[in-house]
Length: 248
Image (cartoon, rainbow, N blue to C red):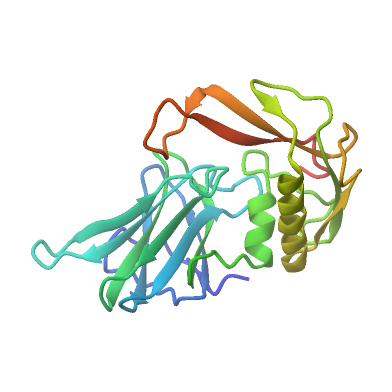
């Protein structure tokens, strides 16, 4: 359950009535195109923080988000953007990692990318990693485009079979290494600890084509690596093959 609920539309300015504490989550909505919602937050100099903006799940979920961190500009009376992110959390969700240079009041600006609208969750926590509680974990696994869920009833526990793809598909496809398999099993175990979704591995040390989620690597030359210094590199993807979930 979110700690802060946007009951009336948050203004796109420092006059916002909404304050988010570190460790809390806010729930709101971008109701019209090009709208944005400000949340006040106090940060301490030298401390590291992680902020995340993601679709709230369901058919009305925000499909593509944009998150910025703003600071008061004394000269103009407005704000200056000190950090921003568009979709680094994947599936249209955004995340900012920020070390505060000074103790001050900042503003998280929740937006839909371009003219996208929908409901969202906004989370703030201290440290270098996003603390994913049950609600955030469910929404990260939720299909933002269709509002699909892994279980018949939203909020109930469920089990999904998962495996490492045997018959490869796609450009530059390769099978998971033993190290990737081990890391994947650690990640899914952590997900299961914070939400009602469990994973059953089909041939956990080998390969299969018979699982709800099938994992493989793709090295696609049509997507150059924009994160590195060399544009001759290839961007690698983990490709997830999922049939229709149980509920839409």
